[in-house]
Length: 127
Image 1: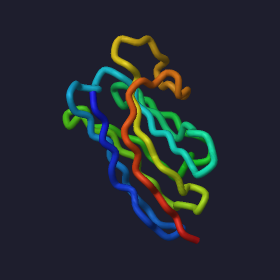
Image 2: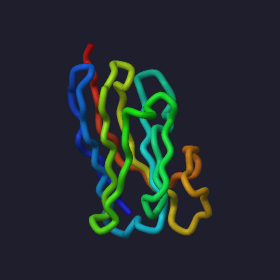
Image 3: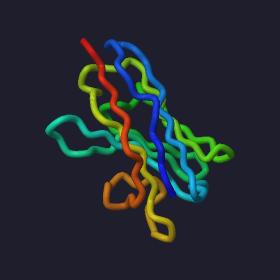
Image 4: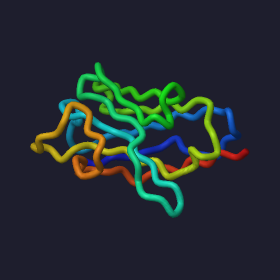
């Protein structure tokens, strides 16, 4: 499966962006998916995750109440709506899916549970 992340850009603090992650090659409908981010000089960190059905979601404390993860299984696409953006949200955002056939939790939060990664999309929030 190939994951293509898009929607990043430059936005002022307080603004909004919506990221998309389109899957191709195989369907991701039966697997949870997640968003991670990596700021310059920092490790890649979990941002948000969603169960295979979309019925359950989980967020890092730093984005809770500001970001919303969703998915459209008919379109094989996942989204991340980011509101009230802060300069500290500046990072490359990656979408990810567990490797097919692997046993993972309902919403994996560890990088090691994900086997497929998108190429990343840069989000820059100016103050």
